Image 1 (tube, rainbow, N blue to C red):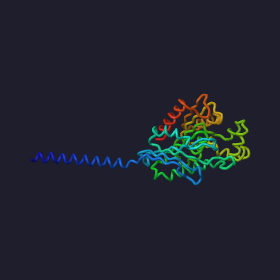
Image 2 (cartoon, one colour):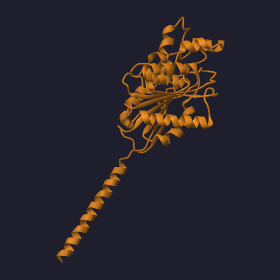
Image 3 (cartoon, rainbow, N blue to C red):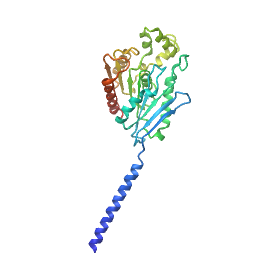
Image 4 (tube, rainbow, N blue to C red):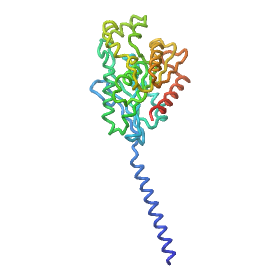
Length: 290
């Protein structure tokens, strides 16, 4: 009888422990935050001050880092939807990152939204994301900012000039302008020159401050975050010399960076080279934003 009671007690103890473990596992699973996506979230009152938000499953305030994406379009066109394909590729590979894909106010043919409207909008988008850190459960001290063309220019400027808290840990630059004076002087296209004059409220001679302040090249310092640069040798819109200059300045300053040149490619590329670009971006982010 005594042996039977001891055996029964052991079985009961096993059942209690197993039940407690199962209950704990159930409770732990119930605390895992689900994947969520929000579209056209307003970060300001203007029509284009919107963003799409992609929050991963299982995110926490410390482990979930941030990627902010900025579309191109010469500051006069383009939309955050241009990056939808990129998001579909990045999400499965960067599961510990929340993605924020932003729009910003665009220059109009009538001269509205001239510089620095665009970088002010990016600042406002950053401030909004920071204010939502507790609600979204993301780590706002670990940010990547990425962009293409005009969006890359804004990403570089945000990372170099506006990164006062050193929260931006990496910048991804896809063929972005880096020096507005050189961009203006290098083009023989009178229409493009006129467009830049409208956007920058004058020429490099009549408005040198804006040309300087809009150029990421001149804001490299010891706190400049790691930067990854991509450019095609035959880019007809943003000369590769813009990225060459950035590469040279980063090298001289001793800033960790990578520079990839695609021979014969223009303002963007497709196929295997685009796949190569995404693979390099994913590797760079994983290596530099831990």
